[in-house]
Image (cartoon, rainbow, N blue to C red; front, side, top):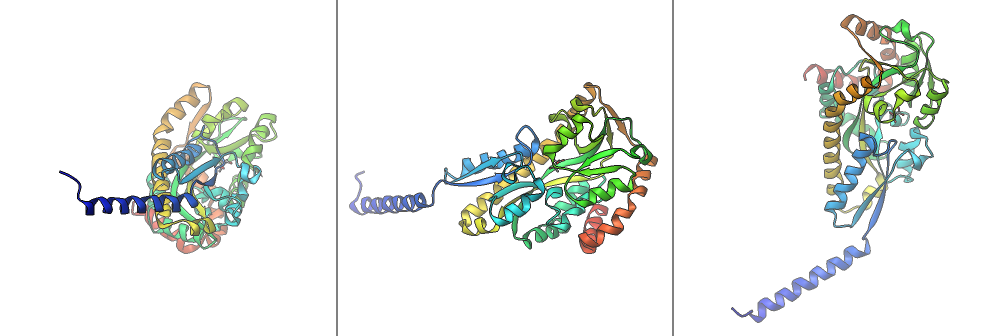
Amino acid sequence: GSRSPSRFSLTLVGAAIALGSLAASADVAARELKVSTVLSDAFPWGQAAQKWADLVEERSDGELTLRVFPNSQLVSGDQTREFSAMRSGLIDLAVGSTINWSPQVPELNLFSLPFLMPDESAVDAITEGEAGELVFQAIESRGVVPLAWGENGFRQLSNSQGVIDEPADLEGLKIRVVGSPLFQDTFSALGANPTQMSWADAKPALTTGAVDGQENPLSVFDVARIDQVGQEHVTLWNYMNDPLIFAANQQVWSTLSDDEKALLRETAVEAGAWEIAMTREQESERLAAIQERGVTVTDLNEEQHEAFVAATEGVYEKWVPRIGEDLVEAARSAIDAR
Ligand code: X2X
């Protein structure tokens, strides 16, 4: 069949429209957004950000590019300034830790309440329910748009001095802690001598023996080879879990089209789910690798666990009011109902 004139002109009109919209998108094209992370893509955390960038790259036809800046470099290594920097526009996007953002968003201390979340399903019950919604509202009310959850993981205790299976073993030990003053209180309650410092300063401090111990997820211990700086003892106490949050600066967010917003959100959710699953699956291999390198790994029995819980109860008295009774209650009922 021969092409009818009317169909031909329709095709031309279509082509013109297509060209027009191409030209229009070329005007705002190749927009690059900066993503901040504390850890590089040697770690699941950095891989979460890279996955986000890869998915956006794949699906935005090159209109939107995410460029990942690891090692807290956008805040000169001071990870507790990441949230402020994102709020002020120095950072467009971040995949950040609840601990590091808690100085600006006190509600995020929820996840640091000692022994609140016994297992992974407790974490999910919070992040996927009403409590998670309240946490996202708290972030939003402080000028940042939360998009999705990831996971740094359950934080375990390591030290260079000996096996720790009761609070008394922590007596006088110098422990490197992060971010929120809540950590100061938890480790003081346990009789330790906590010192707050950035991740950038942590390994040197462990190397010189300026501190005796630290706490981080097994993935961080494993990848950063914390065993090589004298940390020969690990206690698996699951005392808190550090979720990651994908988020955007509000100003940047408001300039995006609805399609771009949907794309960023959908890819963040996907990258987060991917990273959470991967981190959890790798946990047993990590443990085996650490043990193979000669690290003593200590599990707590029920009685030992209870002793740590009892010793840190005071942290709740001080911090629940700051976090918000309603939020803590929502988290508790989600955990009970899981
Ligand atoms: O500083 C840490 O310990 C780290 C890397 O786990 C966080 O950023 C919370």
